[in-house]
Image 1 (tube, helix red, strand yellow):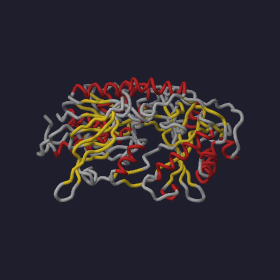
Image 2 (cartoon, helix red, strand yellow; image 1 turned 180 degrees about the vertical axis):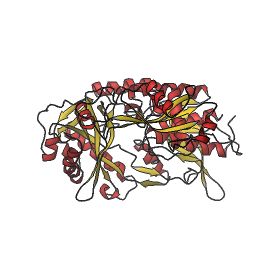
Image 3 (tube, one colour; image 1 turned 135 degrees about the vertical axis):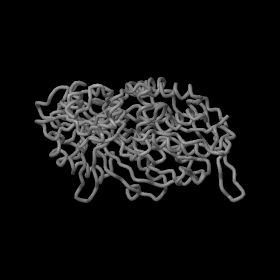
Image 4 (tube, one colour; image 1 turned 90 degrees about the vertical axis):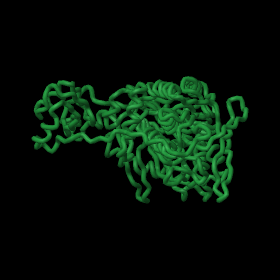
Length: 536
């Protein structure tokens, strides 16, 4: 396999355009080829084009490479993912995975495929039931604490844009393996080469269901409405504590005990009761920084014109953006989880608290673009040195948002946010929000330093994207779940101080999105495979 880099392709390109470029590089017509990487270059609006890497294979490629003098043609050397060999330690009981988000699902997939028959405990509902619960919540305000935008099969990413891009460095082929498994489960094959891959919440729900079916067919088991409540532990002669089992409650409130010596803890970033249980049980935790702020909505067509120009060619992907700025006091403010053509959603998990997030379907064809505008917060902002102070800080902001919106999502126009006055009437930007909302003063839900930092950086963002700081852009809030407020400490073998407990994923503080969480789940599953024999 050889790789041809920097292949320039026009908007709306066809396979014939790719093949013409290959012929110019003297790649024979009989070569099989596939796109390996594709990105859009819109830096010059008069010359918007794609840049691609193309992999090609044919019987004479070795001789071709010997004669090649083009530095943009080389041998493709991507690593093929290899599952490790099983270890020597006998397993008395099957591994237990807590959480069916990306980390838990992909850890489970690898373990099941390797013959370990893992069991997943998921506090929420299967994705079909969960989707109905979420739609009811947005429609009627009936919140189910364990089946909502954050909790349930697929994790929080199931009700998001389904973005799969990540900054994780990967020399072992894990990321591509994750993408392949997504494609096998029904995701569009373009995620294998597009530099900003996404699935979309509509497709992702079916993909999650298919991932579950594959997991079950490989010998795995999953229990929904099953919330971890405690660990069973023992102590060795040298004083080391180790896991002997888990306790969980089912949907009827009945208590169950599972014996196991290996637990993968893949709870999401909103498992606040679990964080408290871990702290009370003496599991080492660490407070970590995260970010809080608001969601902002603009017309998607305005973003298209700003990014591509008013005469942009047809067939371009829905435009996105990424913005960063720094205040005079040194606070970092940035856009996060941008959802082109998407909706703002009520992502609350607790009564009398409001949290928002963004979501897009696969077509990204909604009228508005939305993104979080967030400010980094550290333990110095939390007002306490308690390890759970970040979680308490989140809850405080979410309750203020609930009060500000009188039980609904508080909404404010950008101009009024800058002036710190309540909004009374909408402008030309109509909010696209799943869940009820109410005009008011969102600044009342944010600490002064956070609100002031966002307001200060809006003119800078307006200079980067024309119209971004328009007065009638719509803010909603609060955006408080950007990442976990704690890190569950683990060693170089992914193991907690409690032997046999393997924290992983976004909730444990080791990932920041769907793909990175899935990769972390695979890494932890690999450690269990290296250590233990297959379960029989």
